[in-house]
Length: 306
Ligand code: PSU
Ligand code: MN
Image (cartoon, rainbow, N blue to C red):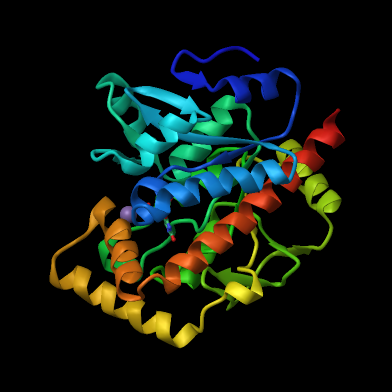
């Protein structure tokens, strides 16, 4: 595959691409802005281990000194987790960060955009962004949703946090033509909890069948797919307690006038701090499970196309 002038592939990812091996993209906002230090560094490494255990090669995506890195060295992963000053980078931020030779941590939207440029078909993360509560007045809808309609990447996540309006998020994905598939579930998961009360479009119980669906959508459709993998039962949190913290965090953001791209990191940090690590452990557990499933899916896709 032809080199892209703005992308730097790690040696391992370059080798995997050259040999047609399975690769799974991982985002960097979860490391730089989604989890507290030093758990974020451990989590960034653990997600890569989970992808490897499934037989695939991890490609964590981040912008370092204006270079869009597809796959990080261990030293680059440390910089991402521990250095200050990483911008939160969505799709629209990529070009300015490249021009300014700056550092950026990619959201779901930006990670999908880069994965598509790099020819990577599978991307695992924790949860996606979506339609925020109160969007009817704030207009705050994550760029992750239009990106799902645009880039042909299968995103494996544990649904979305209830900091969002989940019914409006699913309605928007329907409007955008993005399929939502459940891995061994009919229920759309709500991040910490396996069931939001909402339904997915189709359920898949076998990885080979899921891989056939991904390959078919890449032939027939435009854009990406959302694969919802519920949090493992032993890690799920009781809904009521988290719900109260979500409501508290949203009220605090309003009182402090926090909006725009700062809103999601503010809500995540506040909920993490106030639940003293309980939500953190759940967050890491579900993201690792998604990384493992992503690895299995990428391996199945690579096998079916070779
Ligand atoms: N939700 C989470 N954890 C996260 C994010 C969302 O539970 O880390 C991050 C993801 O990188 C996602 C981004 O793409 O926040 C969405 O930000 P916004 O709402 O500003 O689009
Ligand atoms: Mn927003």
